[in-house]
Structure formats: C-alpha cells, structure tokens
Length: 166
Image 1 (cartoon, helix red, strand yellow):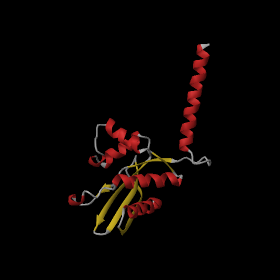
Image 2 (cartoon, rainbow, N blue to C red):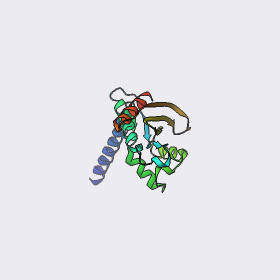
Image 3 (cartoon, rainbow, N blue to C red):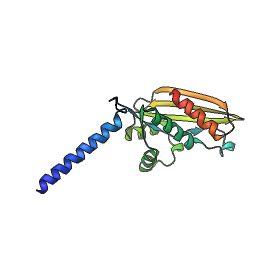
Image 4 (tube, rainbow, N blue to C red):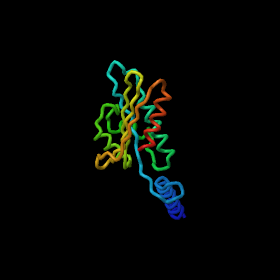
C-alpha cells in the first residue's frame, strides 16, 4: 500500500513540475516558447564626486517590469541573482566582470541578460541598455535614450522607452 502511495505522489510531483516548467516557458496561451532573461543593476558612469546619484537598482527594476509586461520574456527574479552572487562568493555585482555575470546568468537558466549604464550630465540623463546572449556574449540589441532630467520619474520614463526598443 505504501508503495502505491509513494508512486502516486511521485507521479503528482513529476506532473506538477512539468506543468510549472512548461507554463513558465510558454507564452500566454499561444504555445510559443519564451526566452528567460536576467537584468543586472544599471552601472553609474558618473564621476566619483557624483556618487550620491545612484539609480541603478531602481532603473533595473523598471526594465524587469517592462520586460515582464511585454509577455515576451520570463524574467529571472532579482533575489535569484543576489543568491547566485552570494553562492559564488562574489559580493557586490558592481565589482564583477561582464563575463562572470554572463556565467551567473547561465547558471540561473537565462538565455539573455540585460546590461545597462546611466549618466547624468548637468540637467541631462543618458541611459544605455543592451541585451546580450549568455552563451556567446554577443550583443543582440541595444537602445539609448537621452533627455532632460528633472526627477526620478524622468529616469523611469526614459528607461521604459529604452526597454521597449529592445
């Protein structure tokens, strides 16, 4: 009797796992496979004296939100990236190379990664984003936005526009 229960439990776990896997990999109802993508915090290119201007994590969150809403990507959760950094004993993501970041993306099952930078100059903000294939390191698509900067809302709007171009 216990063997039958164990077998049924095993089958249920396999079916649930398969359903979760295939559900995460298919577009909403159309059977199309989605690529998995991870997003790193955008790097601040401002000189050291402007380091108080730190928006990288906030802008990366906006990129993730826009990619998820597009329905074209499965986005790796930010906490998964942080856990992978900790497991690899790499510390801050700002201190590791793009090659290492790509390796972590592969470990998390991402096919692509978004890297980006931002820089504020006087009253202008520039945001650069690029999607990179984790296997080859090839840039698949890139976008750049530059506009007047008066508030964080401006930065989020520019980030959304750049992400939609990816």
